[in-house]
Image (tube, rainbow, N blue to C red):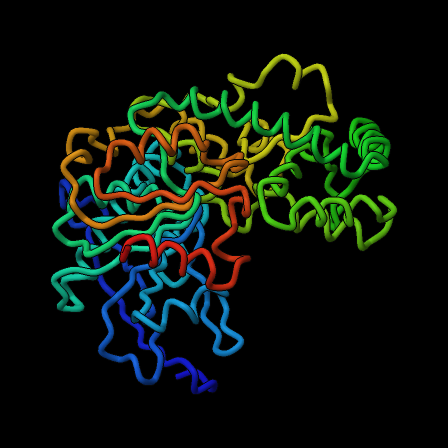
Length: 406
């Protein structure tokens, strides 16, 4: 139990099949933590589906509540924090094995479809006929699959920065996100004009092999460009600017740089499974790399965003063991995740925050998906970026609850 009396925690562990479609005896364990207010033990359940893929659920803290939306949620719900398979206290994916094909086959069972099947078993174990969903980013992708295959289990669904495209090739996704990042790069240099020269000097240092991690590994110019991932977040532009203010040969710069690079060995699943999360059918074949525009190849000062490249598994030391696994998954033919016809028949009350300047989940594609779901109310806003749920306190969630309830 937490020492802070403002929340109460209970934990649940559940053994589930690795492959829900063809149970061959392989299993793993999923972990969930239920958070409730002391006077809210009988409130309905709200399942929080975390962004990622490959990230554990937030660890709750009492007042001031963390994550920031939790206090608002606990006014109406008991919140279920699920460590999606392979993350947190669920059975970890672990180190890459000697057989890359076997590892890749195992990881084909770690996408949104399997996560939803795990959630259904957890819901049944809790003994509730329906529950609500809050899906952030990749968690919204899971929520849309949930609406596709098991809407009868859902009482309401809230999407934040996570209404994915339905039926579009993954190449469409990356073409669009590069365009958004090009615009965000220009806006960043307009806001902080001195950072263009600062970043140019860093790029030169990376090309010359002079930039190093705290462990002494080189940081290339193209790794530096992935810092643009932060331009899609509330406060991210400021965070990047403050990093560039430091001298690049200082220990502060070196440590802060490593903390800000998006694809590292801390969460290998995030890198290995990343492109597959956008694949509503088909293979990805390093889509981000293939769809990178010519101007990105010519202008080294353009930032990339949440764009994974095959070279990450060569240049990032902690990801090198996963190189063959990532290659096998890039070639894998993924099944469809969403059914447009099924979504047009959904009558579950839904609300979605669609962020105008989100470089990870494109606004136009999200609105296409919103058009499919007759029971969904949308809030299209430029007040927040991709992490608006986390940085707004309870405001974004409160707005979505209000939309669902009219």
